[in-house]
Image (cartoon, rainbow, N blue to C red; front, side, top):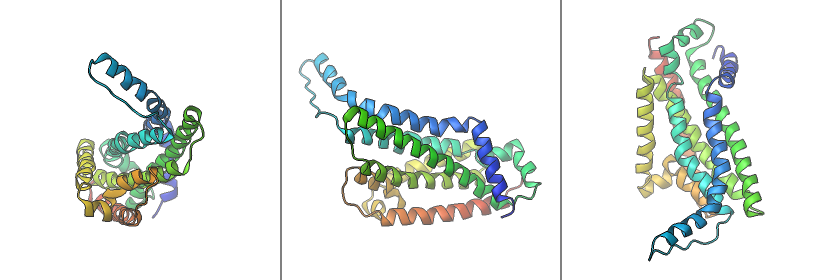
Length: 254
């Protein structure tokens, strides 16, 4: 893969100097800060609403560290994954439409290296941002709720990270296949919502990567679950999509 390391370095430099450094990291830090606060104030907010509605009584147990973690994980599984879809839609197609892909590939950089460097750079940004966001959430949870175990948070977020990394690879495949950023984003959102629908079917939820969300939730609740099949199928799916992205990009006219 000619030029892979050089192009990866170029991608990380571009991330630092463009809007991409703010989107995923910004969302993760934002939700890491707001999740413990929302978990803490929700019971009081619900109580005030019930007081304003005669005959309506809403009782909620006192919030705990688990509510804080659950709120953070919910934000990751919904808003952050959608952000990954949208930001990843132009990973390859954006450079093709702007003409920068042509300039890059006139240098000793293979198309496979081009695609894989996109995946590695986006994955690196996501992992680093997730580590920071998880640490912030853990610290604020301890500040608000007192001593809180870290194992449930680390386990659940780790499984979510596998899901997010798979989404990055899927979006790279779609971005390599479609010339328009909008088409890639639309297909990515379709894939995201399709996985949510398929996960309703118990066999798919147990034996495929669509069950990662369920496994992540069980890890947070410290419930026993078999993560082997969802994780294994996610890895296989990721490898196949990465291979497909490289092959699709090789067939594209620049």
